[in-house]
Image 1 (cartoon, rainbow, N blue to C red):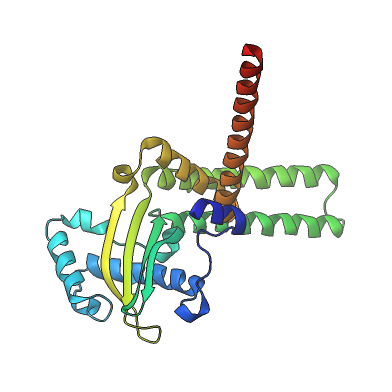
Image 2 (image 1 turned 90 degrees about the vertical axis):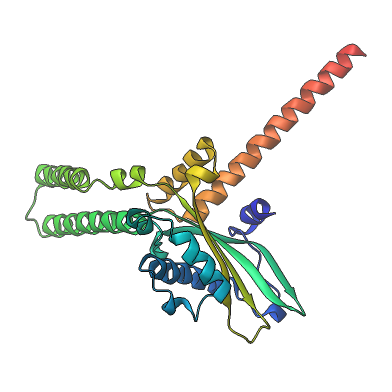
Length: 260
């Protein structure tokens, strides 16, 4: 169960046995890079460049699917690896006939831009605050001047945030769900992508689930790793469930004793 694994280890998947020859971290990171390369080539309709990455059947299917898209719709096909914030492997098969696994990614268009904006704001504020500290240490600023300088830093930062409003990017985009199926004949051979699909969460998820996942992502942008945010959310859900269950059972016990 991915939720229990997330609660216990902080990751959605347990490591694979060594004999499978699959390092989970390398596989998920490589998968993120693969979806970046593949989707950007698809946007450019560079099918010849995909021949070393995808199976012929997969390329043929993608070519057919993309032929029905407008140029504007094709722009949304491309996914940047830096926009992927969560990934997991829901299904895998390792036996004598070969190996296969499915990698699912969650990404938000523009997420890398948002992170860059926040980093610039943070670096600028920390640099200015350090300058104020140095001037105060050298006796160039008095108490009231330090307070006024710090207030000005926070005011300037707020104005810059409003000018470069990352909230608009965040609100204007929805989470994309990517699926890639990797196959290979044995642990020493190269992986080939045999299936690629992508779906907007607006289509895949109910409204409440979309809001919840974006809420988690929004919290992570304040400086906490997304996986830690998700783990904490799952833990609080589990604690709330246990409390509710215990209260329910206690209530049922009370009813039974009253009837007795």
